[in-house]
Image 1 (cartoon, rainbow, N blue to C red):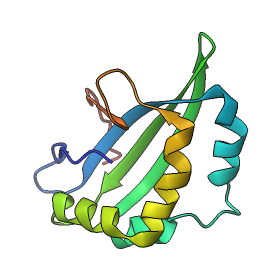
Image 2: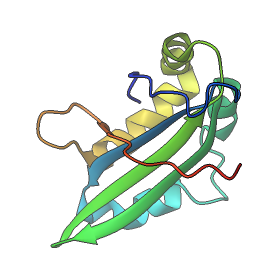
Image 3: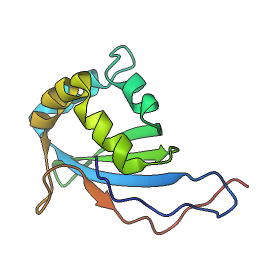
Image 4: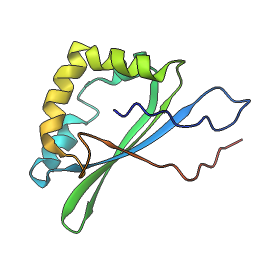
Length: 125
């Protein structure tokens, strides 16, 4: 996951960093990728929470015959870089990525997920 922090949304609110990312998904792996992320697959959900990654969502969309995945998550911890480093070292996360990464095709100029620029957020407060 990218490690470039986003800005907190409101100075008096708890520090929540929001991340949007995009990646290509190989068309031949769409069904397997869906199955890998199904509710019945435990995956690394608990590891994400342990490292302060909450409200993680992945969306799939086909554009011009190419599949793209768009991801969103919020970070509610105190040290994003340290948590991402610790998550990257988790053996189960390493195994998870070894299954997911071959299904993906990074965008030009990227080695994995590409961080998107957030230009708008509507808080419920």
